[in-house]
Amino acid sequence: MTSPRNVFRGVGAISAATEEICKRHAGERVLVLISSVMRARRGARLLLEEIARESDLAVQEVEGEPTTERIDALARTFCEQPPSVIIALGGGSVLDTAKALSGCLGSQASSLELLDAPEAIRRTAMLYAIPTTAGSGSEVTNISILTHGTRKRGLVSDAIVPDMVVLDPSFLQETPLALRLYTLLDTTGHAIEASWSKDATDVTDMYAADSLGRITHRAEEYLSYDQWNNLELLCCFQTASMHAGCAFTVAGCNVVHALAYALVDQQPLSHGKSVGMALLPTIAFFEEHRKIVPSLASHQRWHEKLLRLYAPWEHRVYQGAKPVLDIDRAARTTFDNQRLMSHFPDELSEDVLRRLLTSINERITTHTVK
Image (cartoon, rainbow, N blue to C red):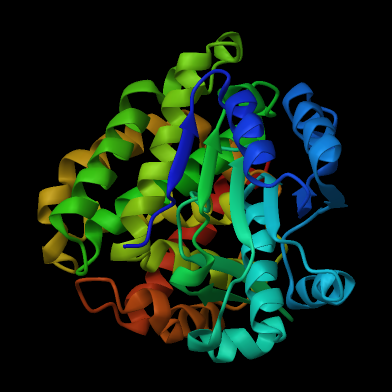
Protein backbone atom coordinates (compact mmCIF):
# COMPACT_ATOMS: atom_id res chain seq x y z
CA MET A 1 0.00 0.00 0.00
CA THR A 2 1.35 3.41 -0.99
CA SER A 3 0.83 5.95 1.80
CA PRO A 4 1.35 9.70 2.24
CA ARG A 5 4.85 10.56 3.45
CA ASN A 6 3.73 13.23 5.92
CA VAL A 7 0.62 13.60 8.10
CA PHE A 8 -0.03 16.76 10.10
CA ARG A 9 -2.81 15.99 12.59
CA GLY A 10 -4.63 17.77 15.40
CA VAL A 11 -5.28 21.30 16.61
CA GLY A 12 -2.95 23.71 14.81
CA ALA A 13 -2.09 21.23 12.06
CA ILE A 14 -2.88 23.74 9.31
CA SER A 15 -0.44 26.29 10.77
CA ALA A 16 2.36 23.74 11.03
CA ALA A 17 1.68 22.45 7.52
CA THR A 18 1.56 25.97 6.07
CA GLU A 19 4.98 26.73 7.52
CA GLU A 20 6.39 23.51 6.09
CA ILE A 21 4.85 24.08 2.64
CA CYS A 22 6.24 27.61 2.42
CA LYS A 23 9.68 26.39 3.46
CA ARG A 24 9.72 23.56 0.91
CA HIS A 25 8.27 25.43 -2.07
CA ALA A 26 9.43 29.03 -1.88
CA GLY A 27 9.53 30.52 -5.38
CA GLU A 28 7.68 27.60 -6.99
CA ARG A 29 4.33 27.62 -8.77
CA VAL A 30 1.65 26.37 -6.37
CA LEU A 31 -1.94 25.59 -7.36
CA VAL A 32 -4.57 25.49 -4.62
CA LEU A 33 -7.91 23.86 -5.43
CA ILE A 34 -10.47 24.95 -2.86
CA SER A 35 -14.22 25.04 -2.29
CA SER A 36 -15.78 28.49 -2.09
CA VAL A 37 -17.11 27.80 1.41
CA MET A 38 -13.65 26.94 2.72
CA ARG A 39 -11.95 29.94 1.15
CA ALA A 40 -13.36 32.20 3.87
CA ARG A 41 -12.13 30.05 6.77
CA ARG A 42 -9.32 31.43 8.89
CA GLY A 43 -7.01 28.45 8.33
CA ALA A 44 -7.53 28.59 4.58
CA ARG A 45 -6.91 32.35 4.47
CA LEU A 46 -3.68 31.87 6.41
CA LEU A 47 -2.54 29.17 3.98
CA LEU A 48 -3.28 31.27 0.90
CA GLU A 49 -1.74 34.46 2.29
CA GLU A 50 1.48 32.77 3.38
CA ILE A 51 1.93 30.84 0.12
CA ALA A 52 1.25 34.00 -1.89
CA ARG A 53 4.12 35.74 -0.06
CA GLU A 54 6.60 32.95 -0.77
CA SER A 55 5.49 31.39 -4.06
CA ASP A 56 3.75 31.89 -7.38
CA LEU A 57 0.22 31.12 -6.23
CA ALA A 58 -2.77 30.18 -8.38
CA VAL A 59 -6.16 29.56 -6.76
CA GLN A 60 -8.98 27.65 -8.43
CA GLU A 61 -12.39 27.24 -6.81
CA VAL A 62 -13.95 23.80 -7.27
CA GLU A 63 -17.65 23.05 -6.85
CA GLY A 64 -19.59 19.85 -7.35
CA GLU A 65 -18.46 16.29 -7.89
CA PRO A 66 -15.67 15.87 -10.47
CA THR A 67 -16.54 14.99 -14.03
CA THR A 68 -14.22 14.08 -16.87
CA GLU A 69 -15.22 17.33 -18.62
CA ARG A 70 -14.31 19.48 -15.60
CA ILE A 71 -10.99 17.72 -15.08
CA ASP A 72 -10.03 18.15 -18.73
CA ALA A 73 -11.01 21.83 -18.64
CA LEU A 74 -8.77 22.39 -15.62
CA ALA A 75 -5.93 20.51 -17.32
CA ARG A 76 -6.20 22.79 -20.35
CA THR A 77 -6.14 25.84 -18.07
CA PHE A 78 -2.95 24.85 -16.26
CA CYS A 79 -1.03 22.81 -18.86
CA GLU A 80 1.04 25.73 -20.20
CA GLN A 81 2.30 26.69 -16.73
CA PRO A 82 1.92 23.48 -14.76
CA PRO A 83 2.32 23.77 -11.00
CA SER A 84 5.05 22.00 -9.09
CA VAL A 85 2.66 21.62 -6.17
CA ILE A 86 -1.11 20.97 -6.11
CA ILE A 87 -2.91 21.52 -2.82
CA ALA A 88 -6.50 20.34 -2.37
CA LEU A 89 -8.46 22.01 0.41
CA GLY A 90 -12.06 20.84 0.62
CA GLY A 91 -14.23 17.75 0.76
CA GLY A 92 -13.82 14.49 -1.11
CA SER A 93 -14.83 16.01 -4.43
CA VAL A 94 -12.09 18.66 -4.23
CA LEU A 95 -9.53 16.02 -3.28
CA ASP A 96 -10.61 13.71 -6.10
CA THR A 97 -10.43 16.64 -8.53
CA ALA A 98 -6.86 17.40 -7.47
CA LYS A 99 -5.80 13.76 -7.73
CA ALA A 100 -7.23 13.34 -11.22
CA LEU A 101 -5.82 16.71 -12.36
CA SER A 102 -2.35 15.81 -11.09
CA GLY A 103 -2.48 12.63 -13.19
CA CYS A 104 -3.68 14.43 -16.33
CA LEU A 105 -1.02 17.14 -16.08
CA GLY A 106 1.78 14.70 -15.34
CA SER A 107 0.73 12.27 -18.06
CA GLN A 108 -0.29 14.93 -20.59
CA ALA A 109 -3.43 12.92 -21.24
CA SER A 110 -7.17 13.38 -20.89
CA SER A 111 -9.04 11.96 -17.92
CA LEU A 112 -10.91 9.50 -20.15
CA GLU A 113 -7.64 8.25 -21.63
CA LEU A 114 -6.33 7.62 -18.13
CA LEU A 115 -9.55 5.92 -17.02
CA ASP A 116 -9.07 3.52 -19.92
CA ALA A 117 -5.32 3.07 -19.31
CA PRO A 118 -4.50 3.81 -15.66
CA GLU A 119 -1.09 2.20 -16.01
CA ALA A 120 -0.11 5.27 -18.06
CA ILE A 121 -0.67 7.68 -15.15
CA ARG A 122 2.35 9.75 -14.17
CA ARG A 123 2.54 12.58 -11.68
CA THR A 124 5.19 15.29 -11.68
CA ALA A 125 3.68 17.73 -9.13
CA MET A 126 3.70 17.22 -5.40
CA LEU A 127 0.17 16.59 -4.12
CA TYR A 128 -1.05 17.74 -0.70
CA ALA A 129 -4.52 16.93 0.70
CA ILE A 130 -6.33 18.98 3.34
CA PRO A 131 -9.75 17.35 3.83
CA THR A 132 -12.49 19.51 5.33
CA THR A 133 -14.98 16.68 5.80
CA ALA A 134 -14.54 13.31 7.50
CA GLY A 135 -15.91 10.76 5.07
CA SER A 136 -14.24 10.02 1.76
CA GLY A 137 -10.79 9.04 3.04
CA SER A 138 -9.55 10.36 -0.30
CA GLU A 139 -6.53 11.89 1.40
CA VAL A 140 -4.92 8.43 1.66
CA THR A 141 -6.45 6.46 -1.21
CA ASN A 142 -5.20 5.64 -4.70
CA ILE A 143 -8.54 6.33 -6.38
CA SER A 144 -10.36 9.35 -7.77
CA ILE A 145 -14.06 8.91 -8.57
CA LEU A 146 -15.07 10.72 -11.76
CA THR A 147 -18.42 10.98 -13.47
CA HIS A 148 -18.47 10.39 -17.23
CA GLY A 149 -21.95 10.93 -18.59
CA THR A 150 -24.22 9.31 -16.01
CA ARG A 151 -21.68 6.72 -14.97
CA LYS A 152 -19.22 6.95 -12.09
CA ARG A 153 -15.79 5.48 -12.79
CA GLY A 154 -12.71 5.06 -10.64
CA LEU A 155 -9.33 6.38 -11.71
CA VAL A 156 -7.03 4.02 -9.83
CA SER A 157 -3.27 4.42 -9.51
CA ASP A 158 -0.72 4.61 -6.70
CA ALA A 159 0.66 7.62 -8.57
CA ILE A 160 -2.23 9.78 -7.30
CA VAL A 161 -1.85 9.01 -3.59
CA PRO A 162 -1.15 12.39 -1.91
CA ASP A 163 2.32 13.10 -0.53
CA MET A 164 1.07 15.06 2.48
CA VAL A 165 -2.13 14.99 4.54
CA VAL A 166 -3.29 17.75 6.89
CA LEU A 167 -6.04 16.83 9.36
CA ASP A 168 -7.04 19.96 11.26
CA PRO A 169 -10.31 19.54 13.20
CA SER A 170 -11.16 23.24 12.95
CA PHE A 171 -12.29 22.68 9.35
CA LEU A 172 -15.09 20.38 10.58
CA GLN A 173 -16.57 22.81 13.10
CA GLU A 174 -19.14 24.41 10.81
CA THR A 175 -20.08 21.31 8.84
CA PRO A 176 -23.89 21.13 8.43
CA LEU A 177 -25.52 18.21 10.21
CA ALA A 178 -26.77 16.57 6.99
CA LEU A 179 -23.28 16.64 5.46
CA ARG A 180 -21.78 15.31 8.68
CA LEU A 181 -24.26 12.41 8.62
CA TYR A 182 -23.74 11.55 4.95
CA THR A 183 -19.94 11.66 5.17
CA LEU A 184 -20.08 9.50 8.29
CA LEU A 185 -22.16 6.95 6.39
CA ASP A 186 -19.55 6.96 3.63
CA THR A 187 -16.82 6.25 6.18
CA THR A 188 -18.96 3.48 7.65
CA GLY A 189 -19.43 1.94 4.22
CA HIS A 190 -15.70 2.03 3.54
CA ALA A 191 -14.89 0.37 6.86
CA ILE A 192 -17.54 -2.36 6.88
CA GLU A 193 -17.06 -3.24 3.20
CA ALA A 194 -13.29 -3.47 3.69
CA SER A 195 -13.89 -5.83 6.60
CA TRP A 196 -16.22 -7.96 4.44
CA SER A 197 -13.80 -8.08 1.52
CA LYS A 198 -12.22 -11.33 0.42
CA ASP A 199 -9.06 -9.28 -0.16
CA ALA A 200 -8.88 -8.08 3.46
CA THR A 201 -5.60 -8.55 5.32
CA ASP A 202 -4.67 -8.38 8.99
CA VAL A 203 -3.58 -4.78 8.42
CA THR A 204 -6.78 -3.70 6.65
CA ASP A 205 -8.86 -5.46 9.30
CA MET A 206 -6.98 -3.48 11.95
CA TYR A 207 -7.73 -0.18 10.21
CA ALA A 208 -11.37 -1.12 9.56
CA ALA A 209 -11.96 -2.24 13.15
CA ASP A 210 -10.44 0.97 14.49
CA SER A 211 -12.71 3.04 12.25
CA LEU A 212 -15.83 1.05 13.14
CA GLY A 213 -14.95 1.22 16.82
CA ARG A 214 -14.70 5.01 16.73
CA ILE A 215 -17.99 5.23 14.83
CA THR A 216 -20.02 2.88 17.06
CA HIS A 217 -18.66 4.36 20.29
CA ARG A 218 -18.83 8.08 19.51
CA ALA A 219 -21.13 8.77 16.55
CA GLU A 220 -23.96 9.88 18.82
CA GLU A 221 -21.67 12.62 20.16
CA TYR A 222 -20.44 13.47 16.67
CA LEU A 223 -23.97 14.01 15.39
CA SER A 224 -24.94 16.18 18.35
CA TYR A 225 -25.20 19.96 17.89
CA ASP A 226 -23.59 20.71 21.25
CA GLN A 227 -20.40 18.83 20.39
CA TRP A 228 -19.33 20.77 17.30
CA ASN A 229 -16.62 22.66 19.18
CA ASN A 230 -15.18 19.47 20.66
CA LEU A 231 -11.94 19.42 18.67
CA GLU A 232 -10.78 16.14 20.15
CA LEU A 233 -14.00 14.49 18.97
CA LEU A 234 -13.68 15.98 15.48
CA CYS A 235 -10.09 14.77 15.28
CA CYS A 236 -11.30 11.30 16.30
CA PHE A 237 -13.60 11.16 13.27
CA GLN A 238 -10.98 12.54 10.90
CA THR A 239 -8.88 9.58 11.99
CA ALA A 240 -11.83 7.20 11.53
CA SER A 241 -12.22 8.43 7.95
CA MET A 242 -8.50 8.17 7.20
CA HIS A 243 -8.24 4.65 8.66
CA ALA A 244 -11.28 3.50 6.68
CA GLY A 245 -9.56 4.92 3.59
CA CYS A 246 -6.41 2.94 4.41
CA ALA A 247 -8.53 -0.22 4.76
CA PHE A 248 -10.48 0.00 1.52
CA THR A 249 -7.48 1.14 -0.54
CA VAL A 250 -6.16 -2.42 -0.22
CA ALA A 251 -9.27 -4.50 0.51
CA GLY A 252 -11.65 -2.61 -1.77
CA CYS A 253 -15.29 -1.61 -1.40
CA ASN A 254 -17.92 -3.93 -2.79
CA VAL A 255 -21.69 -4.38 -2.79
CA VAL A 256 -22.78 -1.25 -0.88
CA HIS A 257 -20.84 1.13 -3.11
CA ALA A 258 -21.87 -0.82 -6.22
CA LEU A 259 -25.52 -0.42 -5.21
CA ALA A 260 -24.95 3.27 -4.45
CA TYR A 261 -23.57 3.86 -7.95
CA ALA A 262 -26.60 2.07 -9.42
CA LEU A 263 -28.89 4.42 -7.45
CA VAL A 264 -27.03 7.50 -8.71
CA ASP A 265 -27.39 6.16 -12.25
CA GLN A 266 -31.15 6.70 -11.93
CA GLN A 267 -31.43 9.86 -9.82
CA PRO A 268 -29.18 12.71 -8.66
CA LEU A 269 -27.86 11.93 -5.18
CA SER A 270 -24.79 12.99 -3.25
CA HIS A 271 -22.28 10.19 -2.82
CA GLY A 272 -22.67 9.93 0.96
CA LYS A 273 -26.46 9.90 0.75
CA SER A 274 -26.49 7.16 -1.87
CA VAL A 275 -24.09 5.05 0.21
CA GLY A 276 -26.28 5.52 3.28
CA MET A 277 -29.40 4.53 1.33
CA ALA A 278 -27.70 1.31 0.22
CA LEU A 279 -25.82 0.55 3.45
CA LEU A 280 -28.60 0.14 5.98
CA PRO A 281 -30.92 -2.18 3.97
CA THR A 282 -27.92 -4.24 2.87
CA ILE A 283 -26.76 -4.89 6.43
CA ALA A 284 -30.33 -5.68 7.52
CA PHE A 285 -30.80 -8.02 4.52
CA PHE A 286 -27.56 -9.87 5.27
CA GLU A 287 -28.61 -10.32 8.89
CA GLU A 288 -32.04 -11.63 7.85
CA HIS A 289 -30.62 -13.95 5.17
CA ARG A 290 -27.36 -15.19 6.66
CA LYS A 291 -27.30 -18.31 4.49
CA ILE A 292 -26.80 -16.10 1.43
CA VAL A 293 -23.64 -14.58 2.93
CA PRO A 294 -21.98 -17.30 5.05
CA SER A 295 -18.63 -15.48 4.92
CA LEU A 296 -20.07 -12.62 6.99
CA ALA A 297 -21.00 -14.72 10.03
CA SER A 298 -18.23 -13.17 12.14
CA HIS A 299 -19.49 -9.65 11.41
CA GLN A 300 -22.80 -9.95 13.25
CA ARG A 301 -21.58 -7.83 16.16
CA TRP A 302 -20.73 -4.90 13.88
CA HIS A 303 -23.97 -5.30 11.93
CA GLU A 304 -26.12 -5.13 15.05
CA LYS A 305 -24.27 -2.09 16.39
CA LEU A 306 -24.52 -0.18 13.11
CA LEU A 307 -28.23 -0.90 12.65
CA ARG A 308 -28.94 0.36 16.20
CA LEU A 309 -26.73 3.40 15.69
CA TYR A 310 -28.34 4.61 12.48
CA ALA A 311 -31.98 3.67 13.21
CA PRO A 312 -32.83 7.17 14.56
CA TRP A 313 -31.33 8.76 11.44
CA GLU A 314 -33.09 6.73 8.75
CA HIS A 315 -35.61 9.45 7.96
CA ARG A 316 -32.81 11.89 7.13
CA VAL A 317 -31.02 9.30 5.01
CA TYR A 318 -34.02 8.65 2.74
CA GLN A 319 -35.60 12.10 2.89
CA GLY A 320 -36.07 13.57 -0.60
CA ALA A 321 -35.10 10.38 -2.45
CA LYS A 322 -37.24 8.71 -5.09
CA PRO A 323 -37.86 4.99 -5.50
CA VAL A 324 -35.66 3.19 -8.02
CA LEU A 325 -37.54 3.36 -11.31
CA ASP A 326 -35.95 0.34 -12.96
CA ILE A 327 -34.89 -2.32 -10.46
CA ASP A 328 -33.82 -4.79 -13.16
CA ARG A 329 -31.47 -2.22 -14.69
CA ALA A 330 -30.07 -1.28 -11.28
CA ALA A 331 -29.49 -4.96 -10.44
CA ARG A 332 -27.62 -5.51 -13.72
CA THR A 333 -25.56 -2.34 -13.21
CA THR A 334 -24.59 -3.53 -9.73
CA PHE A 335 -23.84 -7.09 -10.87
CA ASP A 336 -21.73 -5.86 -13.79
CA ASN A 337 -19.62 -3.55 -11.60
CA GLN A 338 -16.87 -6.10 -11.22
CA ARG A 339 -14.34 -3.49 -10.10
CA LEU A 340 -16.28 -3.47 -6.83
CA MET A 341 -18.25 -6.72 -6.75
CA SER A 342 -15.14 -8.84 -7.29
CA HIS A 343 -14.08 -7.99 -3.72
CA PHE A 344 -17.20 -9.48 -2.13
CA PRO A 345 -16.55 -12.93 -0.60
CA ASP A 346 -19.88 -14.58 -1.49
CA GLU A 347 -21.60 -14.78 -4.86
CA LEU A 348 -24.61 -12.48 -5.13
CA SER A 349 -26.91 -13.24 -8.04
CA GLU A 350 -28.93 -10.63 -9.91
CA ASP A 351 -32.00 -12.01 -8.17
CA VAL A 352 -30.46 -11.33 -4.75
CA LEU A 353 -29.51 -7.84 -5.88
CA ARG A 354 -33.09 -7.24 -7.06
CA ARG A 355 -34.31 -8.25 -3.61
CA LEU A 356 -31.84 -5.85 -2.03
CA LEU A 357 -32.97 -3.02 -4.29
CA THR A 358 -36.60 -3.81 -3.49
CA SER A 359 -35.70 -3.45 0.19
CA ILE A 360 -34.12 -0.07 -0.54
CA ASN A 361 -37.30 0.97 -2.37
CA GLU A 362 -39.40 -0.04 0.62
CA ARG A 363 -37.31 2.15 2.92
CA ILE A 364 -37.55 5.11 0.54
CA THR A 365 -41.33 4.72 0.36
CA THR A 366 -41.67 4.34 4.14
CA HIS A 367 -39.74 7.52 4.86
CA THR A 368 -40.98 9.75 2.02
CA VAL A 369 -44.68 8.94 1.73
CA LYS A 370 -46.67 10.85 4.33
